[in-house]
Picture 1 (cartoon, rainbow, N blue to C red):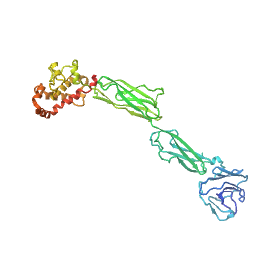
Picture 2 (cartoon, rainbow, N blue to C red):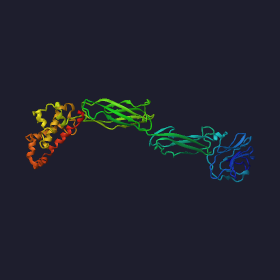
Picture 3 (cartoon, rainbow, N blue to C red):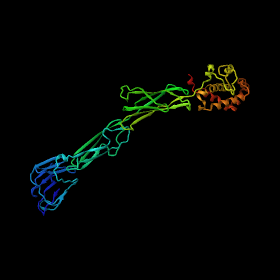
Picture 4 (cartoon, rainbow, N blue to C red):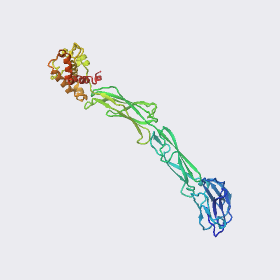
Length: 462
């Protein structure tokens, strides 16, 4: 790089060049003829170098990268008004123009003197993703992004050499590794053409927060108006402490913390088990389902953002809100019998006789036949409805319309004229019994419907 000759004479003011021996040189002349120079070490072929020459009125300085070579010189630079040649010169004494056998790039000329620190002017790369110290979730998709610039300001020395490359530990735009829990680092290295480098390393953390809840109840069955106590066991099965832990249960409401924060730091730590309860929740009296089934939700906060919550839904817990009493119960608890309605086929029958309709009370001379079994289940079902329908409202029973089932069973048995079902069945004979079972299969099957009803929720009465 040199100002051209004037009229075929040597009238250069300065020249940055590489000699035939491969050594870089920076010349400065006060008269255009004499050329004191600073010379650096020989350069290798096919390798990029950043060369810089400066003159401060005291020294001629040549920099290969930021490595200086200097000689003392105190003269004034020769001035002319000729063009500045880049990659060529016109030869000494005006001989034919010669060209550089190589590539020249990122040329800058400054009107002020730069020092070595200004030549080593890389600006630390700016990594916009990941943020230093950032926390990401396991397998969260996060792309790497960064920017780098050469130079530290807008004045002289800013962007002196030019940015040659900026390279991250993974490609820009690629996904960061968030597949493993723990601390990770990400590095970007920027290099200018003077081969100065600056490296920015950021650290990010990958976490897998998680919370778990298990719900239990102190009973499996409770009648409308009775109470149940729910207990919620909450554990931290993730890898970071959780705060602001809450448990909500619909329709029971919000649970109350009971115990578990062993160190009192209000964080659900990894080795802690917290207990929450809802005590004496009242089973609704009106519109309660036959089985009151619900779950609870626990939430815990693991970070600083408003969306950094984890949650879990508990197992479903069902409370049977309807009960009936079995044949065995009615046989052994005569004190609970109540008056059967007038339309019942059992109305007006004395208690000793009704007891003979129940198994083990003499009704089955040769084992109970299908008619006797149907009658026994029908009697228990009618006692349940007569004595407890006001408490349980059996219209809520989902398996069948129990009122219609009772009506159909009574109508069938009443159609047989006699209630001596032992004799009636015996007189049919084996062939007649087989035919009867086929012809009246639907009616005989009512026994199973009534049996299921009578055994429904009997734990309420335990």
